[in-house]
Structure formats: structure tokens, C-alpha cells
Image (cartoon, rainbow, N blue to C red):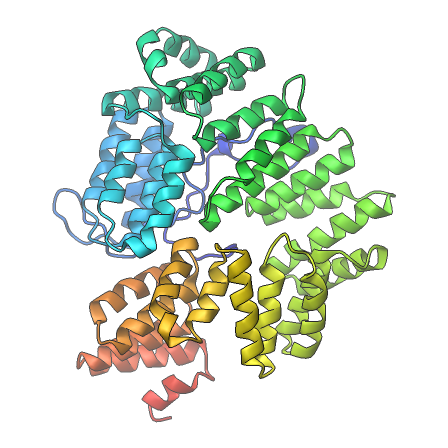
Length: 514
């Protein structure tokens, strides 16, 4: 899970898309579409100014995207569409950028712009998984004309951002021809009715959308939310179960489904303490760590079993926030109540691993890995075996993980770096499953440097840098490229920068004869 990224663009959703923490402000609905959620758009200097095609700085990129998004929010959708189209068309070849834009545009209902992004993708080994997930999750059954996309975008903008759900829905219902032919139009009508509190009509129109396009998972997602607020809220859980069984492979879409499940559990629980627990879990999946902590602390009670679950999840959130003392304290409390709490066991393993006590880490991971619902702890266990000098054991575990979980990007990565015959193919599979997995992009750059393919290596490094611009390996590899291209001063600068970030990095020292 990527939770602490240094992204190119991190535009927060406006208040309408944020979910407050205080009990009296608890969320009534999930935002069915999140146009910007820690958006990673493009590597620096990839997007040209539309008129002059000059290089944009990082702030320019942020501003260009922010302007287009703000126009969408203000319901100036035609201009927004044009701005986004220019951004896509003026972006030089970079698959990471195109994958990001393909998902964001589909998220907004700009399906033609999503397809434009897909058409520019070069390496299908990296991009196919995201492309398939985007289409499976968002795309309507019938292709919309650009004018219809803009019209429905205006309806969506007014429903979600401009407090005009009733007016927009009334306007849309006049367009009977579009409602008869477009499943997406019926989805928007259902969304409008839901936002205005008309659950009965929301059900009618989401049913129509699904009858016209039963494969669209975003429609199912909205159906679950509508059902959670109706007379039979537990029926929503059946929809969630159906969505979880569908073939979504990229990590972002897996996160979306997990987040939806916790939100629906929050909506369907009657016990306030359990509601807060699932709401905290929802915030966790939405990468809202502070909100997760505050909500989970509010879920603590006199019932020990509930407290064990809460403390266990709290320990994971605290660890991810780098608050290691609180993580240890919460994990200890969880295990004192129930010694089988998976998150707590995993956190103790992580704490030991962080302190390089790999034997103790292995003991905790072995216990946590008994939970077969996720490969995460089994992967951590394999890493400890590797660091304890038992590489064959580690590779055997990773191989078994891939047989059981074919979407485990981490398993693909660790097999890749230990098996030259699978290196390139598995590294591409890794970043295909998780576009924001920095190590995968860095090692792809390393492989291309070894092959003297410096332009390709630079593209991979640009992506890695904008996931985390403070990784010492980025500067080391840039130094190697500069050295091979005869740019000695640039090479020295990058090797020194690598050592500033990691003073103990031997390869950089060797390059500088230190």
C-alpha cells in the first residue's frame, strides 16, 4: 500500500468530497467519483504549455491540472474537457502519465479522454492491467458522444459539487432520448436522486443502468450505497461480495473495493461502537490516517473483543504514520486481549524488522501469516528468510504466493530481483499491478542502464522520482547515466546527492573514490 507518496500533484478534494470526523458530521454517502485523490499526473517536464509547447515546471503542471479540475467543479465542463484534452495530447510518451490520466478521466465520466490516454500507451506489458480494470470498473456499454459526456459532466458537477442535485436530476429527466440509450445517464440520475434523499427513485434508475450494463462495477458500487440507506441495508453487503469476486487486479482498484466494503459495513451496523470501528477502517483505506485514529479511539469501549479489533487496527495506522511508540502500545493492548490479532502481530514483526531483529520479526510474521485472506504477512516472512541467509526458502515462499495470489506485485518484484531469467517481465508485471511501487520503477531503470538503454532508463527514473524524490538510488542511477554519456560534472553531482541521502551507500562512494 502506498500511503506516504511524494506525488507530483496532491490536490485535495474540496469539502464536498471530504468526509469529516466529528460524530455529528459522519458521512452519509461515499463519493462515487473521486476526481483527484493524491493525483500522480506526470513526471516533471513532461507536459508542454499548450500554445508554445515549452517545458512546464512542477508548479505549472499542478496549476494546469488544478485549473481544468476547478472548471469541472464550477460546472464549466466544456472548458474543463478541452483543458484535459490538451494536457493529454501535449504529454510526450510516458506510460505512467497515461495510466494515471486514463483512470482519472474515466472517474470524471470523460470516457473519450480516457480512451485517448489509452491510445497513447506504448508498453502493453505495463499498461494492459490498468486499462482493463478502468474499462471494467467505469465504462458504459454504449459509447457516448463528446457533447453527451460534457452534458452529463455538467449534471454530475451540479449534483456533487454545487448542491443542485434536485435541479440537475429534473433537467436530466427531460432528456428521455439519452436516458433510453445511455446506461451512464441512468447512473447519473440515480446519483442525483441519492444525493437528494430519494432512495426509491435512486433504486429505480440504478436498476435501469445495471439492466443496460450489468458488467459495470461502478454502478454496482452505487447500488450498494443506495441499498445501505434503504429498507434492507444488509442487501448492500451481497453487492459488495459480488464486486469482491470480480477480476480487478491493480492495487488501486483493490483498495477501492476494500474501502467500499468498510463503508457499507459502517452504514449497516446498528451498534455505534462497531459503526465507528468500520468507519475508522474506511478512513484507513482512504489513506486518511488522522481521521482513522480519531474515529478508532472513539470506538473503544468496555467490550474487550471490540477493543482488541480496534487496538489492532490502531497499531497498523500508527505504524504507517511512523508513530512507532504508539504502534507498539496499541499492538500490546490488542494482543493482551486477543493474542490472534493479525494487525498487531504484523506490527510487532514490522517493529522488529525495523530494528533489524530478523529472527524475532520472523516469529511474529509466521503467526500473522496464518491469515490467508492476504499475502502481505507471508511476503514479509519471506523477506526475513532472505535476510537471515535462507534465500532458497524465501524464493520458494514467493513462488507459492504467486500461485495463490496472481496480483501480488511484491512477490513479482522479489522474484524478479533474484531471478535474471524473469527479471524484466516480472518487474513490468509488478509496476503494472501497482503503478506507484517505487522499487519496481527503480529496478526497471537499473535493468535498462545495464542494457545501455539510457532514454528508457530516464523515463523509469522520472516516474520513480515523482513517487519519492528523496530516494538515494534515483540519484545514483542518474549518476550512472551521466557517467556513461560523458557528463562527468552531472555524474559527480548525482553521486554526491545520493550520499547526502544515504551516507553509507557504498556504490556511490566507489564512484567518487571515497
